[in-house]
Length: 80
Image (tube, rainbow, N blue to C red; front, side, top):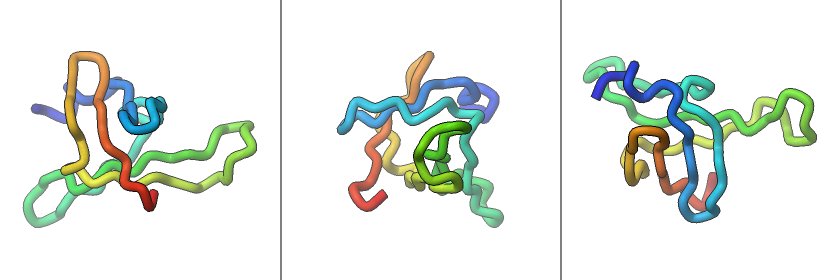
């Protein structure tokens, strides 16, 4: 799958049934040696919300359960 095919997909945590964002508003941690994606880094701060700005959820690529046509369902680690 190409990176361009992932862009714009909703990111959903299946345990909490919570929308975490849209791929494209997240960062990808890429291994410089292999070029493989290691994890998604999802910002949790809102523009004008009360959450801590700069906070993030780091989800290892291996925790992605399903990538569909419109969304990506993943399992966020408990210690997020």
